[in-house]
Image (cartoon, rainbow, N blue to C red):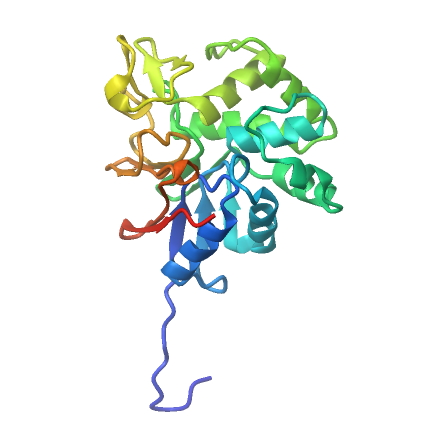
Length: 278
């Protein structure tokens, strides 16, 4: 209890959302210093793709895991690729930088922690998801679909999901079931950049929105998008860059491509950037 007449300092918790780290641990450490991150009072939201392409995926995994309840990280396509590789379901890519993670003595603990991360996280008006949502989905529907995938990932046979991800890409249809349904959900939440006129994911496309193929547009610009009642916090689209829009905070600012790692404080949308240091 404070003594009479003493000034009590009120500490306000801040939530910072951070774009794709992709193994750039030194840059992440510098960004956390820049924002003055206090794990006792602040929270971090990571928009997926903690690992791969950069030099220190192991360091990033350990750093974020050790933050405990101070950090939330959703799964991105590179995180799922790591899990699939570790399970022997997917082959090594020529651009992978995951060998240190796969060889470390604590790999099983780290991979178990990773597969228990959510595909989608929401708190109040904010929704964290790696890539985005198709226009047909409300946030409630997307959260329920993400929970279907998470149940498999956290269950005794996560290989079911990894194998499903290897099969031919399928458009979303609510009548899908089994592995086809799981793969379609993951494809939307970890891969979407632009959508076709009928609201489906268009792949492969990695360029900027001005170069979107004819008959497509960015997922967040789709007419009648049913998730506009929330603010979606995303990564994945480096060519889009950091864009702070009324209902979307896009945070992949291309750190792994030599640009910068971005953070945004959710309550006032203040942006913080750290140039690539790795």
